[in-house]
Image 1 (spheres, rainbow, N blue to C red):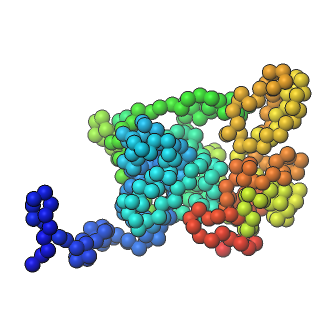
Image 2 (cartoon, rainbow, N blue to C red):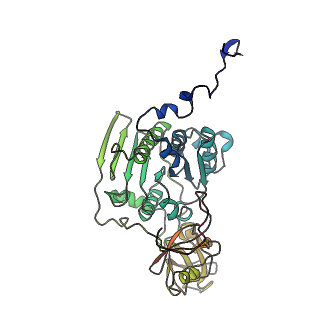
Image 3 (cartoon, one colour):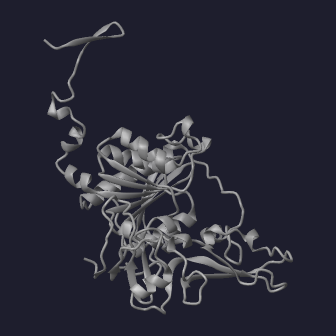
Length: 406
């Protein structure tokens, strides 16, 4: 006779979770003949963005049992996030989105590993991290972030599934490097204006408020569900779902959906060959300088391309105060009012560069202070080099100099 317990005055049989193998976690999914649980458990997926779409996306990936999920987001939780984010609570306001989302996802499924990265897509998500992922999923809320992730995934050779929502629609696109259109191929003039309005003519950041977009949890849930389905199709090598360069749009105001074949821009600047490091170093960005990296690559006088602009120095042509004052910080972190001369109040000239040459004031500074992530792949002269440091996926850091990509 089954053991009974009392709940609210009602006799309820006690059920053992181990009694029926067909009732274990994931049992219903395994009933599908195409479901490869082992493949899903081995997979590594990067999720860029932990807001409304990101919450639903992380939740879905955790529930289907994706083995390792790396979540990157720079922001903290605000009260407006709470009505659209299933993983956040009132007490979480002010905490990093990535950290809280990771913790709650592992509560949903303790069998998965969710790694939070509180940081920027360009400076804190290395190309090698994306190269070693099965898939990169974008849950981003602005054009600049999508532009950056599109270019970075192309360089890394990483498949990228993008999403976006408004108040009445959800969109998901699949982009495979070298196959079909990419996100940047369909940039409109309006998108380019919105992309550039955040920066001054000297390339520094303007202090303007973020533009709020009206959205609901409904659109976020639909977009994320489609992305999870696309991830499943990709991991199972299924012919179903989107093809590379296609976008599905779901309209909520009239309940319609359609798939577009996005046009390829033959002049698209994002269409580059994926990088393949020729050398790997044990030294990480905390100790490695551009000068040391160039020497290790066999070209001590060669430039080191960071992949993004830094402000090398300010110079005031009027009074000379702070002439050639070294700055050596990522341009995306330098505001335009910092270019005001403390001596005469005039606007100083800004020296921007991504290529650190031998005469640069940044040449002997640690790469970390310039905004370079651990395990990043950088071009030193004509050679691509993967630097060392902790592996975000948790694997041991490479501690030897190697040739090739093997």
